[in-house]
Image (tube, rainbow, N blue to C red):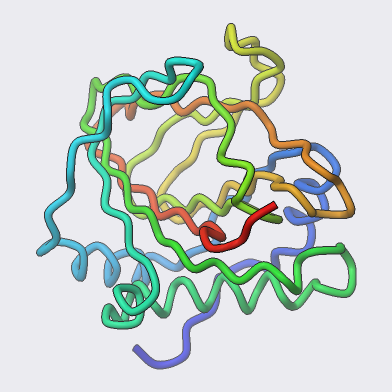
Length: 204
């Protein structure tokens, strides 16, 4: 793959995430890297997401694939994108507590068909420390930060191809646990494929 780096400095979006709980930055992943990852994933079999999940009955409609440890290492494009984001985040480790300890060991690929419902209001798991990083490889959907489980929207972004959405996790900037409620609408035209980086092995 050679050396790949995100197209944007992540300092501003990291500071917005620490302050607001969630933030979006467009144009982070170069199109060629998005394409390389999509091509590598084309041979994979994705499983249907559970229609309803968790104690709050989160509704979701799509497919997913979870990769961990050696499964990431064996896929050069997936590995390159994960490492590029980690390097860009760690460049700001002295500015925000927790960034230097963010070493995501789980990649979740999710694919949504046009007209699907996406994912209703939810929080990511408490064990996902410091950050959750959601990159869109193709397609576009509205991602909304919500103030309640009824879905009252306080901020919203178009998660377009190449964009990065960051969600605050426990431990970021000294917070004990202030995970944002959020929802992802279904794509308007064509499929949307997302690539999410999380810490899966840590406990709190």
